[in-house]
Image (tube, rainbow, N blue to C red):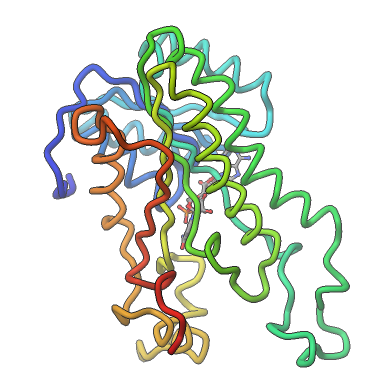
Length: 281
Ligand code: NAD
């Protein structure tokens, strides 16, 4: 059980979450399930969502895990059928699957610091860049095409996308991921407008830096002190700390609730300890 920041009753609502095997969306799946929702947890990694579903079910909540690739529309249609049979029509879609890839990352922050043998901007492969754009953009568009049909039919629903603070100002080394997330912020506004007459709202959160199992050793030395990169990040963060995944849950539950956020659509909410607001001076 986690301590929820908001008590909103989602009883009866079917919440479909992609990337639910991961850090952020796993926490969201739990938050919705604890709030009474019927959660469909989708992920490329079937084992993680099955384990999450087993854990939540054993605690008395409703969650089913599904193997799903957000880039395979036919497979998503099949998962949609399974969700319809198991839980019912989709009320809320969280497009959480996404991320960067080393193939779209430069070794150097600035071209004048590029080293012989390192991967510079000029070495980024079209395939690597394409992978990141596809995962983040198509990986949001395709599940929306599949699951938002239910919402159009019932003239009610909510979509929550996950952008990033790098959508406002790009981070060094990751041009494709930054641009793809800027695309997600833009697409969130597009969807909000497109669906406004159907009763569907669409918003996004833009998380700042989180500490995860994958990046912990890049951010902290063994004695717990920040690495040079971490010190730089914290210097650019007015609140001088990282965001915890649990701190995304209040906004998630709020934005997806029809009563609390009935007039809110097309919003991209930074949750970044001030990172995107600070000019550095
Ligand atoms: P994570 O790596 O912990 O989780 C991502 C999940 O997506 C994984 O379980 C992975 O298996 C799944 N996935 C990857 N490709 C998939 C595909 N093709 N189909 C279905 N599932 C797929 O990442 P996270 O940190 O929890 O990130 C979740 C979202 O938040 C992402 O969109 C990410 O870009 C965004 N985000 C993360 C941070 C951060 O600091 N962690 C900051 C801003 C935004």
